[in-house]
Length: 450
Image (tube, rainbow, N blue to C red):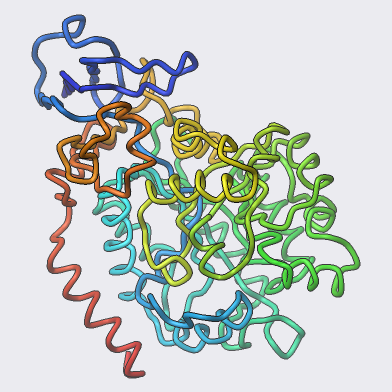
């Protein structure tokens, strides 16, 4: 058995039901599971690994509920387009990717997330060109050492059938469902503290058929795995739903079994009050992606209204081609600022933003084992050095400073008691080698010789 002691944090943000913030705080964990949380003098004096967090704010590890990791190979492309034209520009580039692109982009993307304090990430991989498989991302995630919710995405309706993607990037629906079964049976771990879970994730209502949406929901529920897709991302998305299906996105989702505690939708920028009520009543989750929504001009998601109604809301960095960053703490900051633009200065506090980034994300992914620092939960921890220049003058409230004064990198990120980020850098992979190979692959995509 291995033990971990974190001691002398300036403040430990437990994010438990009491929302305790403990000065001179710490925790003791055994085999990756927290046994004690409290003031340092109350904890055991020794452990196999001892981390002195003097001068640091310690939080639960952040949870990223929506991403497309492969897109970090195509940052700053299609800089001024809205969603549909942005996709049309990128699809031909995505079509040149293969297994190594998926593997290396996952290594780099998850390392970047870990360096921002993220300990659990979902990923929505919805295209599989040139022999790429979900396996490529799962294997890379295991190297980095963060908890990974890999969702088997899909596109089946191409341009010739009225969909948005080119036909070459679509797959037969029977093959999609068969591969969903394969990866669930091979990789999904339903047990507490699982490192890998699988979800079923048709890309969007404008790239798959009604039948695939319905059949995917039935398959996922037969296996007890989560369901994920994009929904109501912008006004074009809503207009497509009205024209194609005769109903708004919420009604379309509900009709096909895409509401419930096991479902989370990305974006939901254009939800109306009835759809918000539908999600609240059914326990349906939302991955809020503020930076991506700003980048693509999609609008401001009604997060304040969702929270007031009781909708589960987590944060998502979204694809690094629609955000150009993979910094989860920055999403918390932007979420707070956007709601203030829309609803006024008190619309979303810094602490509520941190709650969405931790407890909120855990709830969206249906995980009761992460999201807070308390006995029985995973020892998933992020620590931030308050001596960083970004925090100068913020001693008034170090916890709020994490959101107001960022973004900053985590000094340390710990997953299941294992140090993944040390001194601000991912320590579990050959980081520089991965970045060099990533640069070569990105250059190949730019030059068209990938």
